[in-house]
Amino acid sequence: MDTAGLHTLQEILEFRAETEPERPFVHFDEIDGRSVGYSYAEFDKSVNRTAHMLKSLGIGNSDKINLHLSNCVEFLLLWFAAAKLGAVIMPTNVAATADELEYLIGHSECRLIFTQPGYLDVAREVQGRCPRVEATVICGGSANADTPSFDALHSSQSDDRPGNNCDSADEVGILYTSGTTSRPKGVLVTNANYIYAGETVAKALCLTPQDRHLVVMPLFHGNAQYYSTMSALVTGASMVLSSRFSASRFFDQAIRHQCTVSSLFSAPMRMLLAQPRREELVENNLRAVLFAQSVTEDQLDEWQVRFDAPLLQLWGMTETMGPPLMNPIHLRRNNMSMGLPVMGYRVRLVDEQGSDVAPGETGQVIVAGEPGRTLMKGYLKNQEATRETIRDGWLWSGDNARQDREGYFHFVDRAKDMIKRSGENVAASEVEAVILIHPEVFDCAVIGVPDPLRDESIVAVVVPVEGASLESATIIAWCKDRLASFRVPEKVEFRHVLPRTSVGKIQKHVLRAEMVSEK
Image (cartoon, rainbow, N blue to C red; front, side, top):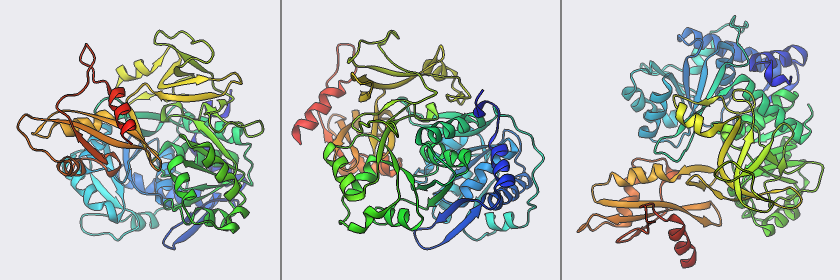
């Protein structure tokens, strides 16, 4: 049995702290200047203080806490402290509105909110709406009468190991992912899940303790948790955590901190390519940069010439833990593809009945695994969606692909009606649900249209109520008040009627084709 089936985050962190106490683990690089580093032993002691702080706030086994935080050390401390107590983190996108956050916190039954000064007003509003929330704690700011400070609570705690004993099957995280319904689904992630994800990436990249991740993706995403933090921890490697992605500073950070691996989406890659050329950036030590989503062959070639930082495209989901498909580190890469099956995963392409499609034909990607270990444990409070997604040991991804003669998988489209915008998954139905409650909207369809910078732009096609005189700006303002900024449509078009099938389903492929032809 592999390590993932036996151990916990607590055990692996404490093993590193005991056997390699002085080895660097995380260096936090604040874009605006603040910088702090932790060895494995220092980090573990600070995690212990954080665990005692959580206990003093009444948090124990199975309790949920919300991390409404941008990248910061406190996020990592709270994550691993919760794991030591058997508690569960529920991270959220800091761009979420109060309405969106209210659902996530209410559905997951979080008892505390941890946030930063810039998001405090939203957190307080949500706390007022969610009776289960007992307090909001501010990280990186001063306490006041209503909001205690993480720093003040943390500094007075013991750094002794908390006495809880956790199991590898215990839940540690709830990561909400957009679905095809109007509500996101909470992916349940266990200790074993996190460790399996880390081991998968570490082995695929041949990581060693000398490697150093540059982490610029947000920690509330599975990418930064699974692929970066966990692969560093299981290897004994280190990581540089940036407070946010900066296209103008990414390679400077990589060079200054001698980083060897990183992870990006295609939108940040295009932003990097749009920067002024600087010949000295090719002197970086990056030996592998993971990325997801499509880029052009010309962009791949330009990247290699300008940065000489080898790319590996992969495919994975929050539900699959590690990436089941990745381009190989030591064999021929085809970065126009999602890669080959990674050791530890079995991947098939099937039709709607679950039968394998013929070579070269398009089918849905399904992944074999064990729930709670190599696949998500399930969806929180949603057994129906869990049964629909995991069938007879196979996770149905909702993504369609084809396999070429050499075995490489190529993405075709999403069976689920999802839009990929600048690395964020946006469920069209979530945006549609907001637009449809506008009193002057009769019908609408939201689609993704290819965008050279953001992967896809969001377009809303709206049918107004008869006699209404809606304008694009009205719909966009309506959405801005109710949705995170990355979910707001860039464009609104008005129609008298939407194209539909004989059974009444909106023909979004017709709308997309029209939009593309108009460009």
